[in-house]
Length: 430
Ligand SMILES: *Cc1c(COP(=O)(O)O)cnc(C)c1O
Image (cartoon, rainbow, N blue to C red; front, side, top):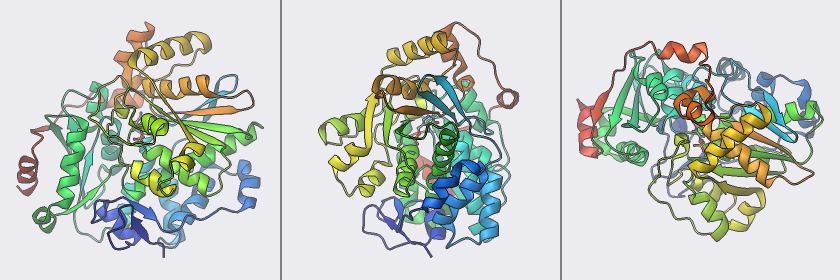
């Protein structure tokens, strides 16, 4: 079996089941797998002949194969990946990994769908309450990933007035086992409420709580699947040498799963973490000092994170070495003005419609690629999720995919709460 240790080093080792059900370790650290297995050279030699699901099953086996029966794991992987994740050319040397073809049109569908299925597998009939803080897209991905799953109730905490109408509809209109809590505060308040709930003894005696934020290993590890698949698609194109992958980052869960992939042998030369004006990580790369701050609201709102949780995992992975981190990852940070300019220019130069998050990734490649490198940026959400913003920038209509239009027909149902933990606790206890 594979054990999971806490990045704070003061909690006992946990089984996969415990890590998935608890989410956060007792010492508030994040769980990390005890061993990261290197995949065989043979796998990489033939990866371009495998389907997305085959690649993902192979990677999943390295993570979870010691703890979940092979048939079950295969079924979870195949159910999760019910949609494609294509790499498409945007301009010379720059490719987009489109992660928005899932049910809620953002990359978080992959991790959320996987986690819902794994939690269901581990959940022995008892009701589990999933608490999830969202700055926009996590809430919809988790709510939709868990919708109708028996024995699970999901509470989505989101900052009032700080998510787009389309995002809000995607988790407030579902009903059934999904409750939306509208918090009078910012994303970091939502995240603090969730973290405090896990630490509260009384609450934990009354109800089984778990998290579905990117801190959960069942969300974070499966995200590495699509980095392997992106590599295989670039290899098919004969462009797998000197690959640079650029990840629009907020809480840093996505890029962290890429770094795990690299540790498993995935031949990606280096990574770029692209930020919006929330540039705590970018500053860390430059100065070696990590100074979390309050988040700033931007037009790439799913990256409005001032204290990225998964920074702890990156530090852990590189044993705290700033030098080692800088070797594998460089950074970039863009203002709303620069994001706007990039969306407009990319559309007129190439015809490709970026969303505000992907725009940070595209721009970082445009500015940072060396002549012998090929870049892939992650298009983390469909531009229609940010329709008002994008249309205002380009002056051209953004078509709403049918999947998204269906959400807009529902009725918003949410419960308003303050950012005070006592209120939140009382609400849950009642
Ligand atoms: C969540 C999200 C991000 C940031 O991902 P992290 O794993 O938190 O770094 C970027 N873009 C979009 C569209 C997102 O929803």
